[in-house]
Image 1 (cartoon, rainbow, N blue to C red):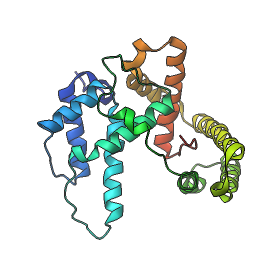
Image 2: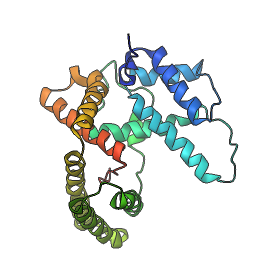
Image 3: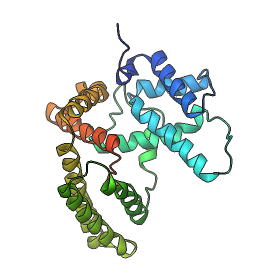
Image 4: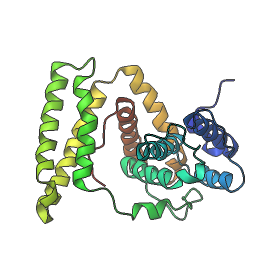
Length: 251
């Protein structure tokens, strides 16, 4: 029998933990830090909360990238323990839930009890910082191989509009700020559709299967229509990750 897909491991805390342990070892340059005791209890809580492994991996990446950015001269940093990644994992999980439309059902056995709810209440980044980060990620796409003239035209127009919003972002208040945020939602939807249109059929099939597996733990407690919307949003999110496409919506 083949290996169980990573997105299916939430129901098996031991396998879920080992997958995270393996990924953390790789990001720690081969240094193995066992996930045992309280650390295992923490990770088991993530599994019971149905946090996808892809979300945990991105949380680990965020933590390590921030450490490396803070001290670029330290080439032999100490290995990162999974406990130190908790805030990053919960933050990414909150972003994932908002992106795919999955809420927290506090009466469910799968409802996160690891603090995921409290992360949502914390301040998000400023509009200026958000736009600058999005523009930085869009830049390389304009020069990527395989970019057609139509792709270039779309990206140039998108970047131009985002730069226009950025110019006055600090002074936006009230209705003007709400209008700018609403426009970002529209642009984000257009960007998602652009990613879908240029994705090969085999990639679309693969991300569709991955989206179904990520959302399977939530299916029984979601109306069919809402679940279908969440699966579609999850597919777009996975396509974005593959292509390095930023999310333009400011949560």
